[in-house]
Image 1: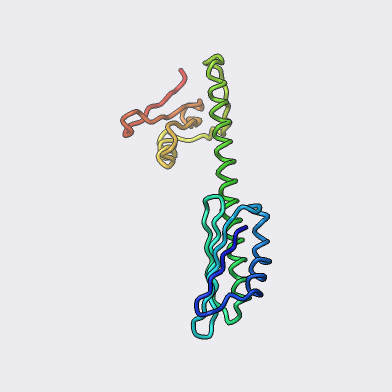
Image 2: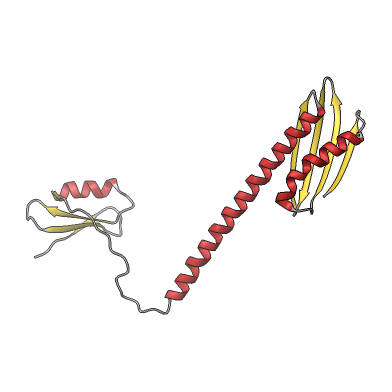
Length: 177
């Protein structure tokens, strides 16, 4: 951990340096000893401002807070930095997990490429309700993602399938003889 402390309108005392170094040890659990920290302290009016920049693994984290007490400002900055680091790590872990799932699916698809085709690999169950052809058409229109709808025709008491034709304007019916 490389720490550089600069003071503008404030002197960076040894006590401030030791305090900042002690607080920055909380970040070691995220990066180990390999990160650089730049701290700038300054005074504006009644408030002391602490700017902390952390450069680790190509990522840059920044926190700036103002408080009457410089030590409180440093504490707040460390809390902010720790939150940013956790958020970034969580986001990366989630992305890596999703990427690995996608790779598994891709491998499964490639692995299944040489398996025999024409087999039934998925079964869906549904409840076929008795209704008129017009009602079935309305149900199909309500669900634009569906291309067909299976129902029991109330006129014939037989299972029918209504489907959208390729022109997306008209419909067809599959009816047993």
